[in-house]
Image (cartoon, rainbow, N blue to C red; front, side, top):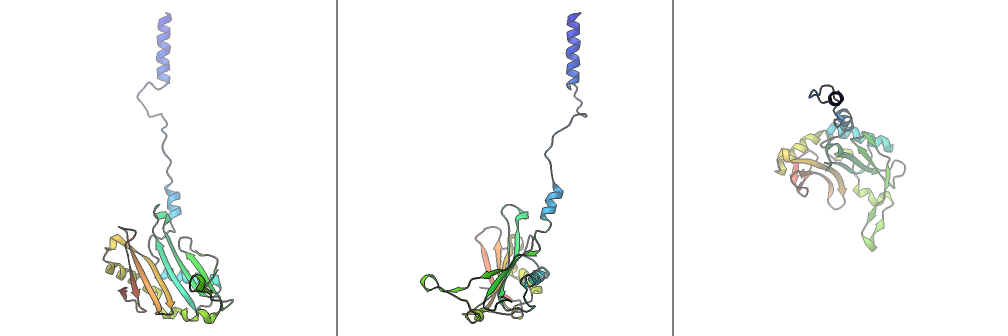
Length: 223
């Protein structure tokens, strides 16, 4: 009788440990996924250059942050977009404006607006210089930089941004699905006046890009 008892005990143990092929009652470990959290972190990220309405909103936010008037004297307006190498959630788009300080006309202040965060950063004073090395001098007076200033009315309206993006992409020759606009820049140079430019970046090569000049009416021409 003892051997039979041992046999029955072994069979009972096998059954208790899952000897059956029925897996319906087993818990299976799976890797956790967080689609909601991923979507939340990506919801405000722009994956292309901001459109005209977005640029206008950002520009007004910058003026408010600086405490400037509605029509300040500008030194530079720059809109930039860059694709992240780590994934779409890391794409960056921002507006940067340099203008005469409302507190001291002999100074230039700069302020950046981050589209992904929908907010303007704290303004920073800009140090202006002329020359290089031993000939470099600091420009600390309004008369020293006034030749580089311009007004908003001197450049094309922001609401034409979409049209010039499309024209620049078409004229780049890269193909609409193989490139993107990466830069929109307005700046006055004493030697050749006010320049507005746009740059198109190829997605096939990090070193392949083409720049275009843009006039006040929004016409795009290669450099």
